[in-house]
Image (cartoon, rainbow, N blue to C red):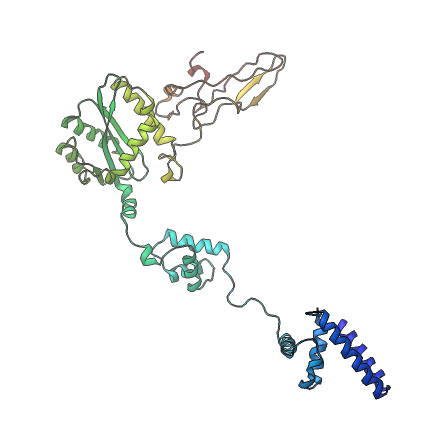
Length: 416
């Protein structure tokens, strides 16, 4: 609108000039030129609006080039303004150039396919996505994998030792010895077996004299215990200790298992067994003074049960080895009977009460009741009892536990 107003004003000014004499016009031109020279001396660079630029660019096309010195700007600036007008005239609004971007969900799906299936290439991933109704080009899949630092399929599909062991872990069993010093400086040898897939401790035994007959007998006991296993083990991994005699290996070879010995002085070759030894010492043995072998057997029995059923493992996504048995043990509900009231209200255990174990709020060791129902209320060693519930205002409340299945009764707890 401003440009139209300026054009109309200049047209009326031109009409008025047509009725004026040539002498007055020349005099006015001289005055205007003088004023223009004064303004040029005072202002280095004038501030022009878009309408001023358009008007000067149009008038520059009506005047000859030798007369362009009357303008406040240089001829190069006038030509640039005109080129900008032409470019704006022939520029049409357009959308985004190129292919549309791949959605975040599709990108995460491509990365998941590549990581879980190392042998899949770009076109295989594209084909799997087409089966799910998602259309993505191979070049887009390649760009996504490069952006997430994933190499091509031949590089990702290389068989490393770690991947090979993980594939064979379901059928591998590792064993080793560890020593425990008692209070009287008696050395006790502990033999244990660990499955590599679930990190489960399958068998533990201890003795002060690990001769060949004792070691072979423990191997037979282990095979009897694993007789009903769903997936039998095919490999046994142990070091070159002289305690692993020929009879020990013969027991496993008779069951169709292959015995693999680690290299000499290479504990990292049996890393799962060495890791369990360190875990056992940090969590249990370094905190207890062992009196004798009977005491050690009891401690190991409780710790192995805790290790297999409750202790989370980072390699198992923070799950215990026996996932199906590691169910949450719910705390019993306290029923408050107030004096003078016939109704009872059920309230959960106080959240501020002290607990000895996060996985066992009641302080009792969870035991399979179908196998040994008489040991439901057995307490772990060195455990403190929970604080009693706070008293009610009207009188001392009576606490009673409902006799439900799978939950310890009050008679199983030791008296104060």
